[in-house]
Length: 277
View 1 (tube, helix red, strand yellow):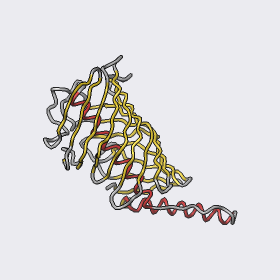
View 2: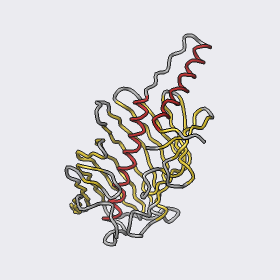
View 3: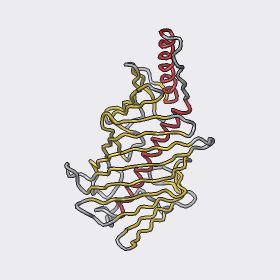
View 4: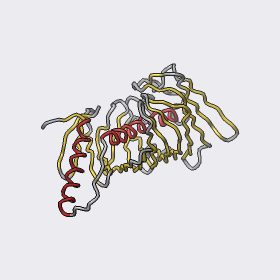
């Protein structure tokens, strides 16, 4: 099976839109032409990657410094260049992650600025955590805004679970265009709970989100088959994401659980294997 690089996936999406517009034009010469930009699609994909990487940082910081992992973490995600300050203000607890001007985390992400977590006491097995970004940059992309997390110590499967409501804005290098992502992300921690290291963590993720860009472009994403993340792997290893943009819908299938950089882009019944970068 021929494998194509990720940068060509947007070309397939563009081709589909072009064909759709051409057919409509043949049937109705007054049909509105569909505009497509590969730059917009790339920025949308990057926004999703930035959001997932950032949520991983937040969840791991909370686990290491508040929940059952506190005091028994054997291998932290955060190296010495991360200054972590844990404090209280009345009934409000805080965790401040200060990455300074540049800090390379143990998973390879390069970050700067800070993230503030604020939460109350444990109530009926849950924490409510508010998070905000302060001049935060991850792998060259700026992140502002924040949101809230409902963190359950044990869900119906007796696993920790985070329900994230987000409203974040991502900025990119070499462009004034920014993207704002709003949505809900539910992450169930299914493996590695209580092991004292982030290397064996596995999460099942569902949810949906809408991304709007300052140039008017919009894209929505919805998990139709549970996404599987292994924190020791830089890629999604399983599941399917449905993507809608420019009035058309496609899907990305991330594989069968193996840690590799291969996935399949599916549009109009056709499958296009590609390499994630």
